[in-house]
Length: 410
Image (cartoon, rainbow, N blue to C red; front, top):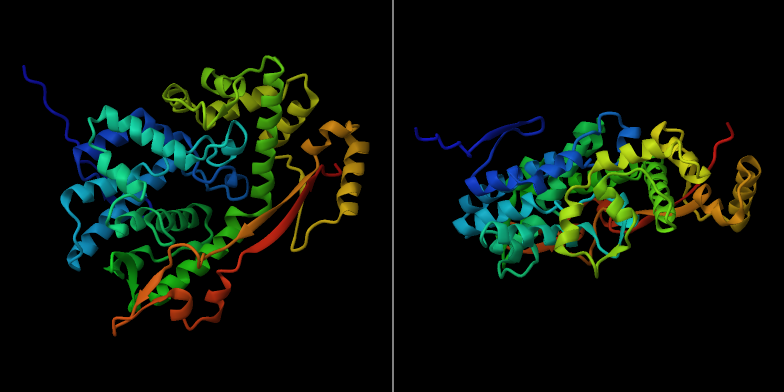
């Protein structure tokens, strides 16, 4: 009896775009791989659901959405006569599908706590290189494009630029799941206006207002969602929990944690010793490992770990003040004195409960790959010069806000 071969050309239903086609057996096999399936267990927006209850979508959703937008872009650019070979097309789908595969649990928090000196982009590349061996070199071209080494620069810009498929998806997707309408960009219109001039990705003149809306939406989403003060304090609190756990672990204190999580707690992992074996362990670590451990740590005898863990699990977050100017030494000192009286803390652990920092928002970077507008007369101009909106230029200025967190009086 012959076994029927499974059909790998599947169709997925996405709440943002509707039906998404998996275009090839290679893409299907990559999606089915345990390394990619892990993204179902990595939240796209970290702890933002503590502010916006609907924000429970994952990196898996986002990666599939990016691939869909890349399919639309390739189809559109070919229609306009831009040269993209079949191999380059497949490589683009692979590269955008795997561009975020290196994210750790809760996306960005673990980059600063469990591992050091290595970011998710570097880990993504490590995953791609390991998968390339497993798939007999079929990812080689995708890796070249992902690293920016391909001679066709516009292929790289579709994956990583100031108007790439990553940003076009996450703004629209995060807007949908948070319910923040200001981020709902017209990604289809922007893709329709794409073209290539002198090896550079550009937007045709008719799309200038869609680009303006995109940049303004990006600014709104950062202040209103990604840098929301409650979201900021929740992520910083998670970092403090992980920092304390790692501190105790390296002192030899036994902490309940999964095997993969324990590996990163009890070892100093950095760029120099992040081997392929480390990558295999990293691939087993996700949101569930971290949060199930933090729930257990509530009953830990260490006051700091217990208090911080309970604060995060039960959403008893510290008070946070966000303002335009840096806090004075006197304001910081007063907050520390109050916390010390209330919690009876020693000076050496006070920073776990009273801490400050700054956040920044720059919607458009004039020194990075520009978003260029192609006019009907053939001229190409940066969006800040092409736009007649005065506030577009101001979006390239980095705006800072300063926060201070301390225990609530309750």
